[in-house]
Length: 420
Ligand code: C6P
Image (tube, rainbow, N blue to C red):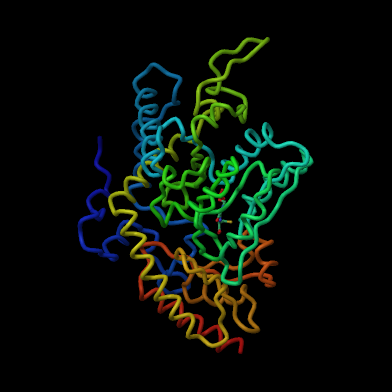
């Protein structure tokens, strides 16, 4: 096998933290935008990819490209082995009990839709309730709304406080006998809030209610342990964990996945087909109809290897330092208000500024080479909750630096000079 160019520069978990060395693994960061060095602070939307990921996809197409689970020839066997190895890597990443509890999907959105369309359709009836929280992304609202509409069920919303923390006592009050499923985010993409999942899950399980966790914003920042959380489903997207787009995973407890009807019909999800009757494949294949995104899956595997080489605990520590530094620096800017001040936060900072629309902030920052996201961040009900139309959002990754935080602050000062 050819050695990927990136393996030579990847940082091992034991070495001292060297952000400049890490940045060498991300060629996209080495560029200027509008004549200024790029400061990429839109990691919650999608993260940049290390060479290890880019090379893994390229090498797959250069050497191994074939369909999986279908051929007896060498390339197909190689492709199948590589593809299934990634399932084991995802199992390890999430600390799932078994590899068959990992279903490959297009991303978090598809994972949640899969559970709504299979578990939901089977188990939710008229008059039942699904409990979500006020800080959910549209991907963890709309599939449940669609299910409720179809079944005559009701969507309930657990409230949050002014800091953007889930109010556990109110959440508990909503866990009535009609609730058939709790769907909650691990980390809010707008507020950065890290939800207390073990408590949330324990309260639901005491009443026999399963819990789905939207892990889209947690997987890039935290060491996730689905056995410790004891959630029933956990969803994440590869492109937010430094892997390719178009792939992600759904973790589901084996006994739940086994009892669920299939999602889509087609190739690979069957064990036998006649015109009279189809017998379905075992899990997880029952949920993986059609040729999957094989190359992207291989890329996801390389991203997981890369993250594990650096160490997710170390990543969380570095990002925590960046978050504290950025929060302190932004808090000193008069007229700027941070939206989301939970005690437990990941490295995401949303803010608004007196008299300045977030889109204007984003446009001026772009001219300074600083990429942030502005808008409702696919969380319109949350914007309404805070009584604001939009926020500006800086979201960090382990390759961001304190100097970049300083550039962000200087650029915001420029916004003020222009608009105030
Ligand atoms: N949030 C953001 O800029 P997909 O698109 O399926 O990979 O992920 C959807 C999703 C689900 N849940 C949460 C908490 C998310 O943050 C996201 C994606 C991006 O905040 C794009 S809208």
